[in-house]
Length: 94
Image 1 (spheres, one colour):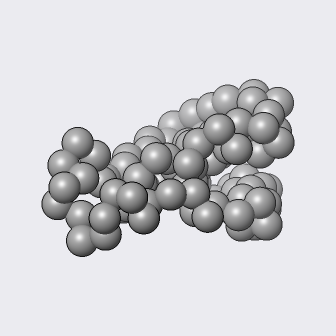
Image 2: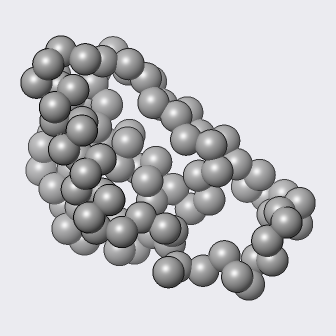
C-alpha cells in the first residue's frame, strides 16, 4: 500500500512538478510512475534515494511513490552551491 493517496501523485504529475525547477520531462515522469506501478503490482518494495537532487522535482515524485514501510533520502550540496562546478546561473529549468 502506498504511503500517500493516489490523487496526490496525480496532482503532482499534472500541476505540482511544474512549480519545481529541475530536469524532469513529463514523459520521464510518466515512465518513473509506470515503473513504480509495476513494482507495486509485483510486490517489489524498497527505499529510494537520489544523489544530485537540486530542487527536488524527481525526488518528490519518488517520495510520492513510496509504500508505507519505505524510506527516502536525498543528497546534494544544497546551501553550498558555490561548490558546484556548474555556475548557478546555468542551473535553470530546461
